[in-house]
Length: 498
Image (tube, rainbow, N blue to C red; front, side, top):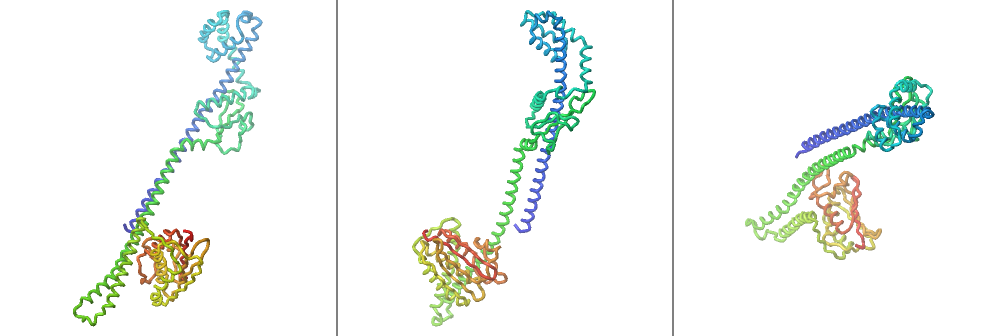
């Protein structure tokens, strides 16, 4: 897939994801709005019931008081009632009649009381209650007087305890089980009753309704209620759907980022692998061509045996064969690392001696580049338990890279020292250096540091990958310090007690 298609693919995915997030946000916002409207509707309905019940409660209490007052006034003349009717039973009968809206039909309930209380003069009681109910003039006058009263305080019309019971009961019947704060105000300014935590400065919505709206002279009593935790309640009621929606959106977003990252990374890996194949082909073709040419010289009958330098030709074949084997071995080693199969043969290694030998093997190459290799082997403890072959390859790779990427009068400083019970090996050069961008990639497989317009640096991009894996296999750590055009320093840290 070309870079152009990758960008188009990523753009389409991004647009789809943004659209999905927008739709989810709109849906959540709309769901919250609908839930708020439902809550407002329930509260308003409950408050209307509260207003009606408060007014009804006042009417019932008023009528009951009137009946009891009249009953007391009539006690002196109604000796039959006094002698035959218990006061508690009379209150029960009056309450029963009141709750049934003073219908004459409720007198049939007296039969039940008659059966339980045989000593009651039921006929007299029936006639008495019938007379009271039919005396509409008395009832109407009393009720009209109630509605035109001006001087009755709110506290005398309903107690705070009764008000609290009505509010609590109506909210429970409406399915509203939230904490609330309330107040009773007169003309929305003077608070008559209020809950302990009620505040006029609340940021919550205050629901208000007029009380006693049927009074002929309206004194402006209002019930005010707000719910401190209403927003939390609404969000909690939609919690499962909201959190599920947000979680799924986050998962999709994460997979989108991961997919885009993998595609871009695979594109880079594909390019690196193509470069690797081209480099490998070139590196393998060179020794093969040299060996082939040497073989043809040996077989060429036109060249007399005296003129054939068998020793020189065999040396060329041997060196190129080793070179070819070295390249193949590198590839095989990386294949082994990829499978995680590393078999190290540990032995006690004199690191100073190993470094001396490796520096000696690079003498000719260093002279050809006019390079100087300085050794500062100051470590007092310089023996490690390590695989000699792989450890030698680690040092060799770092020296080789230092010479490769130092084009003008290379200078290498190889030093050792001990610190914090570790043996530290440092290889410093004055080469082209590594940029911050590339420094994080130099240990990636097949990656090669760009050298600008210079294209004579050969390799597969496997050397530093191999170095890092082998250092870690020996329980060590590798650190890099580098600056463009000022050189690089590679430090290897190995524990002495490993």
